[in-house]
Structure formats: structure tokens, C-alpha cells
Amino acid sequence: MLGPQTLLSLYYVSAFEILAENVVPGQSSSPFVQQGYFLQVTNLTNMDTPVSVRFPNACPPLENYDPSISPAPATPLFADVIDENGNANIITTEFFQAPIGFGQILILANTTRLFGIQLISPTFSGTGSSRGLVTIEAPQGALLSVAATIRQVFTTNTANGVEYSASAYALPLNNGPVLAF
Image (cartoon, rainbow, N blue to C red):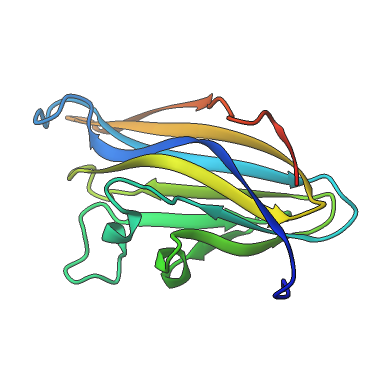
């Protein structure tokens, strides 16, 4: 855990957009897309490093998708961190506490974590979206490699069931792939 005297540095990493909606708004017969944002962070040092990934100006605010709100939204936000062993850790209440995002997640020396946010609609209906900037914060002396991606899943209800298609693409990074804190 960081002490009160630890100096932190902050970088704006990339823009993000998450959504769950029909490709053609208002047309339920058009394919439904669920788009998530993922940030891969690799610790390039021989020391364990705490990292915070935040979404400071999400519009609409991500806290609107807190699944504990009653009634729950049709397209709740899922926030998760995948650790160096491939284990997914679903983040719930702490993600929605200000500042919004993943706070003080420890990345072990020379390992990688994957931070993800996505709106999930189990019924392939409803709408939801948010967009904004992503920041990363780490102690001075940290050396991180980052890569941001958008992943999309398209679904279409047909007479034979649900058909799926998917795509993924990299996002440009504001400061390049290696961040020296």
C-alpha cells in the first residue's frame, strides 16, 4: 500500500467508448453491438507496482450503471481485472466510488494485468453508452507498457437462433506504449 509521502504521476492514456445498442438506433431488427474497453498494463520493473486506472470524465457517468441500483439497468456495467494467471476478478462497489475506476491494483514485477469495462445486455436489447478519457496513475519510478483495445460483439436474432460476430482493434495512445513515471 502506498504511504502518504509517495509521489504519484498521472498520464492520460486514451479515449474510451463503451456501448450496448442496436447498430441502427431505434431499429430492433438491426444487429445488436456490445462494445467494451480493455487496457493491458505490463509492469516492466523488478518491483511490484500499484496502479490506478480511472475514467474521470465519463459521459454519462459510469456510476449510473451500478448494478446495485434498483431497479437494475437493462445493460449493467461489468468492470473486471484479469491477473497474471488469467483469473478474472469482477470489481463491484469499489469501482463506483469516486474517483471512478480501478484503484491501487497491484501489478507484480514483470507481469501483466488486463483492466476491462463493458456494458453487458443478457437479452441483446436495451441501450447504454459512455465515453471519455482514461488515466493511469503509478508511483514515481514505475515503468509500464500499456495497450488499449476496443472489442465488439455483434448479435442478430434469427429464425435459427442468435448469430454472433466479433471484432477488436487497437486504440492510439496519447503518450506512446511505454510510460515512465
